[in-house]
Length: 369
Image 1 (tube, rainbow, N blue to C red):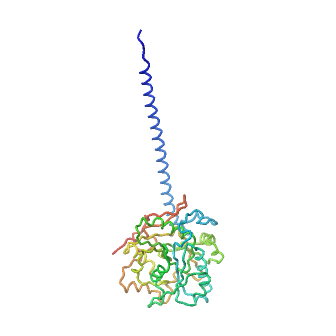
Image 2 (image 1 turned 120 degrees about the horizontal axis):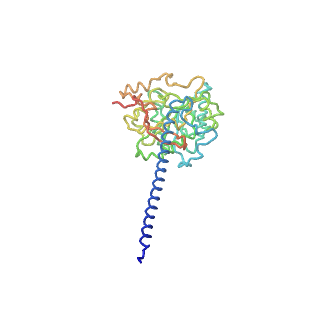
Image 3 (image 1 turned 30 degrees about the horizontal axis):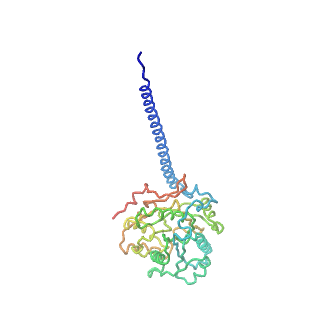
């Protein structure tokens, strides 16, 4: 009788079982990997869609464009931000305006609102009021600003913007320096934006950076609204309108920006804002960032106007004539806010600020020799 050996059969069955198990595990892992890849792709697609949606909202909104459906009234921007500059200043803010405005009650209210509003951003800001009027100290000192004299341009009798930047850099050591018109109100999102840009600025290898943006016009801002960040945001939402792309009411630069290469343009007169931006883009190869979507710059518009005031002064064409006299290239069309190669956005999903490349530049933004 022939003996049947079971051991080889058992070995074969075991081997087959191991092969089947290996195939099942491999298939399961591959399936899991496919699911994860699909998930990642979907999330990336959502981010791109959100950024695109934000740009659409910006382009079509007539109130506070593209911004802050995610910034509800009553919520502080600082709640969820990890501040590198918690106890130190990140920016030196400065401005200058005539202080003999007592005869104009509207101007008195506007400037007092600004002097109060900016100092609420401490300790994140250093504040400078430049003036050649010795009596200005009594008024501005009420709001605890730093007051420094500035030499007026010898031809115009008005401060030159480049001189103020140079002096500000000598006075305070901060990451950023910003001139804002004296009728602009700010909120905490300027600090949040600058902290974010500072965190990614190494990407630009110490290049000169210029941050600009459009303002939001709000009619008859009250002193009560100015008392809080929420009041300012609420006024902007309820009756604010985004102003034109050729009006730039502020310039924020880092230390590397070459103000020594900027002509002595004077503040409060037409022409210099677009030229500086265009010159920075086309000739100085500066990184220009449009922060319209993340910096709330509220322009206090009064019943008497407040828009295009630079065209109403006696020497309104000073800057334009200076450009012509120095035979400088015309850079106005290349200096619109929408010509900035970069822009900051706030994603709808994460509510975090991001820096993205602009992909909708107008053909007029192209630099020409």
